[in-house]
Length: 339
Length: 281
Ligand SMILES: Nc1ncnc2c1ncn2[C@@H]1O[C@H](COP(=O)(O)OP(=O)(O)O)[C@@H](O)[C@H]1O
Ligand SMILES: [Mg+2]
Image (tube, rainbow over all chains, first blue to last red; front, side):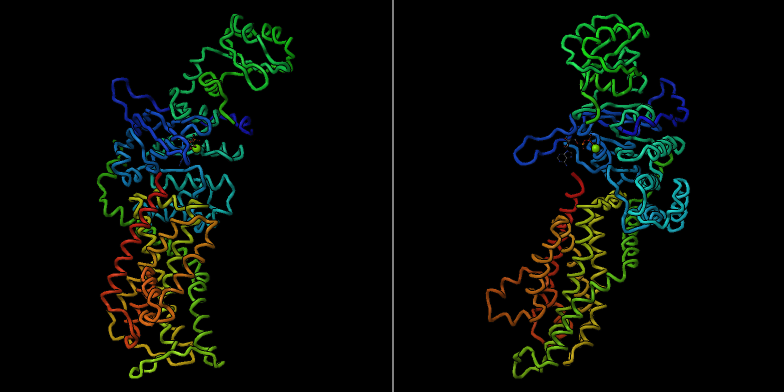
């Protein structure tokens, strides 16, 4: 995974929070949302979304973090009028997605998991025609397309067709197109999946800049670094349910641990977990693919004790890291985000 | 509330829809202009070769169709019979290649239809635009094919339009039916089934579409004469026949007009329904 190399924090200063008594301006409201797909053949129905509540404030970058199949795409699909909800309500800028999808579409931008660029049109035409779909005149659309190509550093590729663009460029063009009509909310479904590390960082910068354009961003991802570095708030989703929703720092705080110690063992750690749990400074112990993952607090004093106890089990390596959102996910579900 | 929201509320819905619709037509027009050569080739090839072989080569090499005529009626060449039929086929074929084939790929492979689906209109509008643009191309096809089917034959072609509104009306109606048929096909088949579209739709519809023979002639094969009535191309051929070669036997005006209007309603409804279903889960 190349994600480890991406450590820069392209985070713009956060907007000052409104005073407490002022009611919050939610640009997206999701209430008790349920989506059931009929199972294929005779298999049982699939509850892709199983009762989700979400409120996204105007101007924030909001992340939906979860493993494959968690229901992220389906959630975005309902919010963007592409999936009928089985029950529950979704409002975008106060408009119900079920009652007036055309009006909802006027105020949202969408980048799906797939490259949906118009293959028969050039980069410039993709932007130009998109603008024309959104009530712009020829002159406005032309100007906006030029401006966006420049802003997204695609000016030299204005005459290229989508199939001639690299993955990173195609993705930038998709984002450019999705905000061409100046939507109030931008939905990005796994925007950096399949991108190389550099393109990923470039895209993170673009997403951070949305703040300056006053665009609220809802993005889904299964990369915890992405959620951590980019998002003001993150909802962790699994099996169609929101497990927790808060600022990344707060989510990590709830672990009550400062350090994640990974003990790589050659032998099965029978009984070791129990022993470690009794050590002071150990918050929790979970099995990982090749050993144990130990959450600790109280500084480095506990580390030698862990190593001592683990030695008998064929300790091959110890890695120490700060807790991440992945740690939060594991502590909530007992599973890792990827795979 | 942001200024954007207020702006959205103040805009007139009709204007928003009309602009989006116009934008999509514009996009399709741009693509056709860029692909003018493939467009012309696929439009001209079939009627050109057909008229060339059957109305130029055959008479020259002495191999021909013996068309019995009513003794009192005027002598009518096979070339004359073919004119309305080949124009009708060109339109249906255009509806399929302009609407159905791109749609099958956009749904099944590239998903590029997404951008138009996200335009601020009800999803069915995107399907309606497909029908309308398919119809525009069908009209162009009809106009392009006319000279070919008239000039190429080595036998005389007798065309006279006595009722222009009928001709214009028939071409418009037939082109819309072609676009709607294209939408139905485009929302039904998967990319790997494209060859199937030709063998189970294009070929039977063409051969059993009263293109090469007037419908009345089928009277001697009664079951076939009734069976082909499910084929919308029959009414297009007959409608054009009544407008272009009125001296040839053709169905009554009311019959083919009603049938075409009915076909348009059924095909549009089915096509748009399937389109929305494919797009929204
Ligand atoms: N069109 C569909 N028909 C049936 N099941 C679906 C459909 N789309 C998604 N699902 C199922 O719903 C669940 C959630 O899928 P999805 O929202 O795509 O998850 P994610 O985007 O988090 O990977 C999965 O089990 C998936 O198989
Ligand atoms: Mg997904």
